[in-house]
Image (cartoon, rainbow, N blue to C red; front, side, top):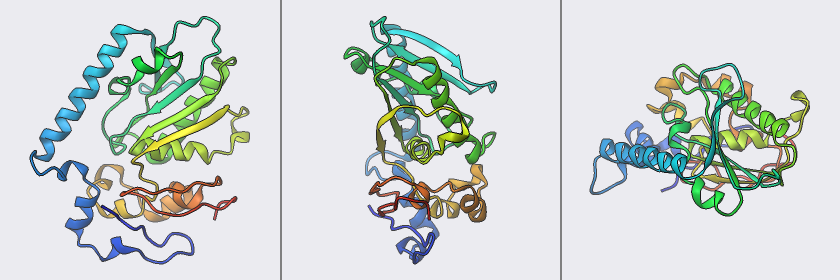
Length: 251
């Protein structure tokens, strides 16, 4: 399924503007796409599987859980460590999805065991979710988590970002960071962004925004759509994203 995104800076209106409200919401609701199961069943099964996988990961590998990178309740990291006391392993930083309003790091460690077994440290990032959390604050939290890791783990072989859905959006925002504002530049060597939402304008017109309470002027002012603001060369192609090659400077 494809949702061509909206105008953006200097762009033209895309196909999503011609959809009915129901059709647009269906496009942004993967849980509605199953021909066999109802959305609530799919969501509950996903959460249960992710939580169970995380519990197994915590029981099977060396961990440092609930490590604070800030003063907020959710500003914590779960770190899954390989058996390498030298600290020269790569760090994979995973940012969970949930449309910025559900899930947590407690459902984000399920993929750690196979990576840890190959000498990769895995970090699950916690951040405030809506309605308590606001989008611009979430972006800042994830960026600060990266600076914390860069300061704490100085001997690693680099940081690799991974995010799913809303987490992929936040990871893309990390890639557009001006690190001079933070006094340290994390050694980010790569990123895997899975099924991300890179243009926020269409979701302003769906139920997803009920908890987020975003407005288009605020999204534009804060540069929260990485599709239109990313300073790196990336091509974003997803059923819930735009398709555009970013220029070398923000537009």
